Image 1: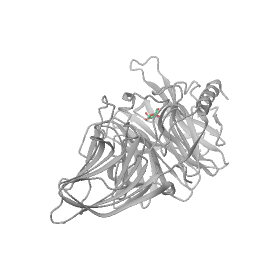
Image 2: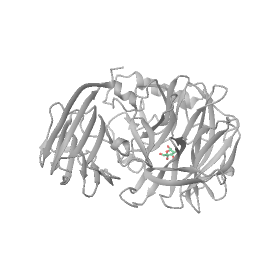
Image 3: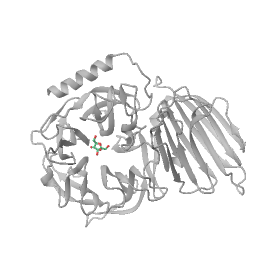
Image 4: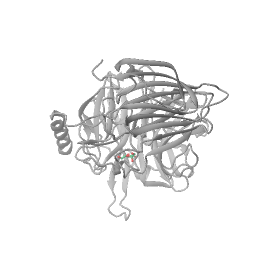
Length: 497
Ligand code: FRU
């Protein structure tokens, strides 16, 4: 093992053994110490789920990224295990950037990732990006002696050596490995390109799967590609988008494309594109195929545009979303929290047919900061829809975060105006509900540091971190006009299993 990795492992081990000095989310993954960004190498290997992640153990700001590592049997309770990789070689000395994992035919676990090295001659201080391999047994990983397996010379015409990253690997039925890689390119801004390999070590460029043509941002990162139900899905994370409509927000955003690959041209024929998560904090989502066939997505609950503005008092920074089960229905990707979360539910409280007539209401037993809530809102009279509904949560007096909905415009908004982070630019997001037929279903997962809202079976999702005091745990329903609520809440208890 290299000195750099040994040092990182000793450092995290020392912190792991210290008594927990701070509050941490109970159901959202955090690093043992230091900074965390993208999920990497999300996979099922040797009867356990593995989650690797972009990790800077020595600070709570981004820098010198390692690959942290954790394992789980249910995707909810994670056990930290020693870091898997450190930036130390000629091709990755300034960072082991994002990538993915796959089980090889010989039973080994292969990691494919981007090596990052600052280019001293570049006035813009960018870094050269290459693709690399490490092979391991679920605990220890050895970098391949022939790294980089894809260097800047392998980027097809017009490709930018400073924007060539984040390989996501899958295996075909015939055992051939494929990797989608994000590539910045002069003519298209960003494209997703495919490389293929028989053995994981020798890779060859195959084709362009999808091009941006400057529609969504200047560069795409962290691509993913997978078949789902009766379609194919591409995920990308678009950088520096300009707001195009209420559906496409400015800044950095995860997008999903639905469509089908043309067997002749190998191009992805897109039928639709949508925002993956409308909240302030969801980026670099990566999926895995669970042994029972579920396609599961996990994301970094942050926004790269504002992550560095957070000032944390904790020894760690960054958290992952709740893993989500994916499906496609009626041309939309549906995301719902993994069903494993339900085994941590306790203390059910239910209220049915609660009427709200231009008033504010708290309901008995409906409060908490570590909570799973199911809510249905219906018009009291379908001919006279209400004007406005608001659900306030993480509330203490007149400070709260909120979801608001106006049926006439179908406008949905989440906000956290009373976040102590007054410097944060991004404290609200708005979108339009695809359709409104008089009823809105909401599932909300609250943890001490976040809220995730899944609307209408996960067709519209909002994720956001919350930095308010965990004691701010009231929930209030507010209406302008008449409506009916059905509410069910459960406390989530991490000691149940
Ligand atoms: C996305 C990203 C990736 C890169 C990594 C570096 O958040 O910029 O493209 O591999 O973070 O930490």
